[in-house]
Length: 209
Image 1 (cartoon, rainbow, N blue to C red):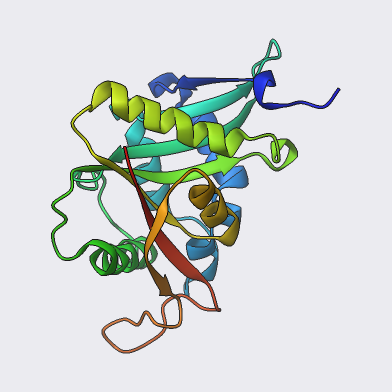
Image 2 (spheres, rainbow, N blue to C red):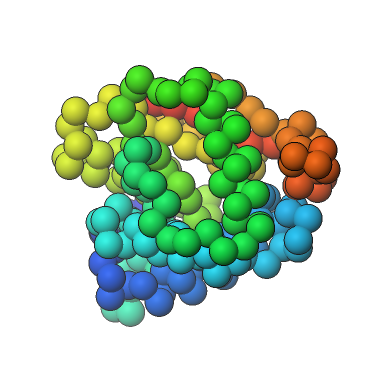
């Protein structure tokens, strides 16, 4: 019998999950994340980027997917937060600064200089390669949306930045609409140098809730 959607359990992570979340992101999120891979300084994730991701554990907005087995293997992670929240860690590397700047440009392209819609942003979605095609990514997004409705009922939208085609397809399947896109080739730094190499692009999407 193949594993399906109901063979997994979903729960909000706590600070005690910090190291297993770090391991999951290092194993099957960052090694496939296009902005991380395409940066001119090389494909390795930076410490400030990782610490930024882990900082959401204290906010109660990280959702984990585990197998139903006794050991509860961690097979999926989604990380979200209020769109108005500032980055709570020091940006110490050029690479993470470039990623933040790229996403800010995309955000302005999608929503203008100041969005009037209070929203919640899902920053990361990762599923272990051995457990893909079991609706885990979709369920993690649904759990994030349910979390928003329970904790912030006045928020009216959930947003994402899909950095790859598969994640973009998933977001559209759950009802998100494309707001804007920005290709690596179209983004340059102040010296007019290409920051992210290759032909990738990132798509901003939004869903009213």
